[in-house]
Image (cartoon, rainbow, N blue to C red; front, side):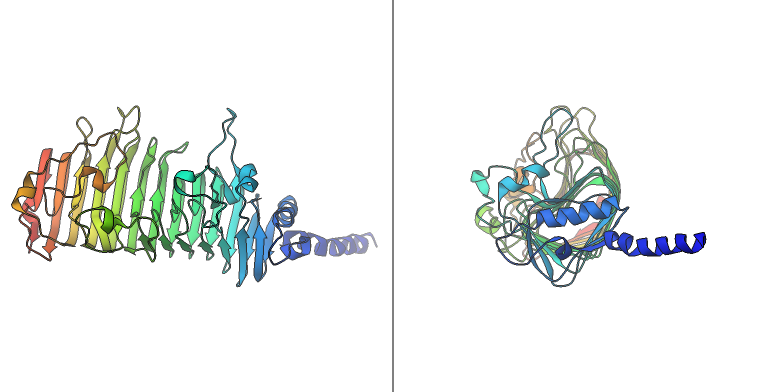
Length: 458
């Protein structure tokens, strides 16, 4: 009899447990339509599921406006097909989503879906999260008051999954994973051209895998940052599309700590679908297409950090100003320990649209080393004159690292190398749509540049 009573008690309890581990937000009071902030209802569902030991919070088909919500340990936020979470267009509402350090200093970053110090969290499904970042509430440009929210902001979390969702119209960077460990991102689609600084994805974490994603955005598409509490390391990005008005594949700009063990492969790079702010062809002489990517591949350390063991391969790019931009600089206060070593770039096919050739540059006293370029095929506009070979390239050692900081035309038609050691070139080819009288490759203050005779042009 006692066994029967115990079994009955367990069976009666199971529906309650199951219900607390899988909650539809409408069951907690969320309602479709305008004029309602569903954040309290969504947060209530997240809190209940997390306290029950983990489970799923489901957003059904429909439009649900929400202010910031905190994702907590063990919770999967699942957006069904046809579901849309719309960011509340009130910048003051995101004040609570700023991380506060032990010193009392408030982080400038906030998020619509945010988490700090959580584990086993996920965002999944075929629905959409739209930050409504183009709303007048999120002022842009010089009038920006600061605090524009990202769509996803995860800090110091473990075991993070983001799969399949569509992320649109962020007020700031679209998604930022900083000081996290164990991040898996697959099949997401990012489209954001409504505001400044619309990076597609910013990674500043370790043990990260990103696969089968599409990033179409105003600012940098795939961006690894190295200014967190730890090295950005053991990161793999593959089988993605990167469409950008800035840099497509970028390590930088923040680089006070740095990057190590980075693999990026099988990426298609192209111009963004919109250009609402940049208009490079009207600002930079020699840009030959109306919409362009700044650099297809940009590897940068300028704030005192390190960059070691980076492997980038099988990249097809078009609509780019500069195919490859490698820069070791001195923007930060203390760069005495900066180093860039072991960068391998291979299997690149590129169509360039400017006179800003590919470059590998350090500054006096800071030399990138052990740089390997192989199986590179670049087509460029050409049109360079013999006089351009005598252009003086500014050091620009303490400035923001971008191709145009070295000038809108370089003295080399194909590749400019300065303040660099141990650069190895193999099967590197350049083609020009118009005759180009500049030397194919120019080196300055370099040691051990190997394979110059393996480079060709036509």
